[in-house]
Length: 320
Image 1: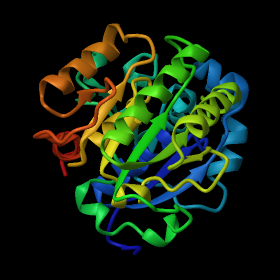
Image 2: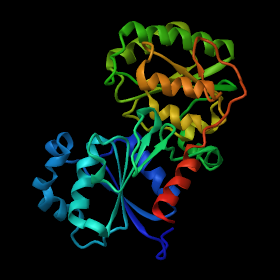
Image 3: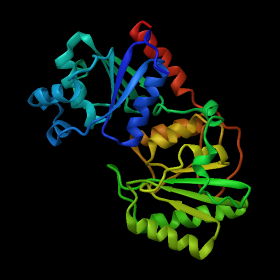
């Protein structure tokens, strides 16, 4: 509900769900009035954020006509960094800009940055987070609406949720990777007498979806594949989920599931290396997740408190 005594914020998003959810999570944690504004930046503003001065006039027309200037502007991801920089240039000290993820720009262009600690970046206006912010946590599960997942034909007691990514900056999974994953998840699902719900991301190629579909049809009948173009039951599906399996490229999904008490397993396409490997190894060492090797089981799962720890630091930085 709108509260006139609270400050206002704009959450600006190009519609990329994982990034948008992180911005919304921060707005909710700040306990402020916020407005979600959909804006797809021009190509050069996305690719060359410091070209922002070329778009000052169009940005003013889009954002500042007949509207109240917000106290905060929240953006996430490199593609939205130029928008944040441009609006700060226009509004100066009238607004505080908060950007999530490494913008790959000099940090002085932003008032506050929230960057995952596995990026190993430190600065006076940078707050490090353990993974991504989540727009829900365990307490929210009880509020989720099962009516939104009524199309899930439940016929087994245990629900296994498999969330699959795909091509990313680090690698492109092979067809054999998807087939191997399908056989491992079939074995694991059968062993716990479960039903498999598969969520496909926009990064999962059509050929991979066909491989998964064919494999499941041949070896296990209790499954349902839901593509990103269909009504997405996430996060409502979590209310009935007993086990979560996520591919290692889906850092946002892993971070969100890390805040829940549901057993979390991470499946690797190729073995991760670099900062993502460090991130996953750290969470495994903390007892937050297990590496998926064809078996599902309960373990003494520890939950991350990324949201709670981050908002305490943000409030301190902002003097709230």
